[in-house]
Amino acid sequence: MSELKRCPFCNGFVTENEIDFGEWSNMWSISCNDCHASTGNHFKKQDAIKAWNQRPYDYDMPAIVRRVQQLETQVTALLVLLDGFRNADPYMEFSQAWQDADKAGLLGFLTSCKQPE
Image (cartoon, rainbow, N blue to C red):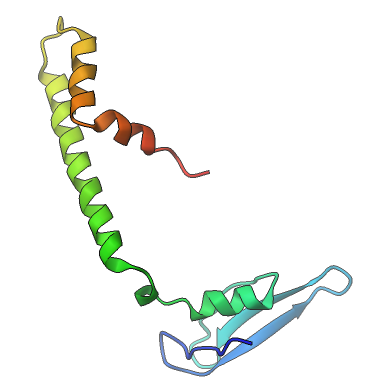
């Protein structure tokens, strides 16, 4: 069994909580005894423990920062392109605008920006 980390907010001790739904099933949560921070309910005890023990510094922050910087660059280029559309000659061929967007790598960026499911 995994050892539970102390509370990330107040460094308090924590408790595993089993919620009994009778014939249905049980759910689990982890909560702090002092500040009452909680994981919310999980169907598996191990999932509740994993959620509690996860800390922001466990993520690969340098990779996240690099990706955010890449996205910021692409968004800036997209805004420049859109500004160009706003100020463009209304008779400019639309296909030329798409070619410019494709050269800037923005079409791939736009198609990658789909809504989460």
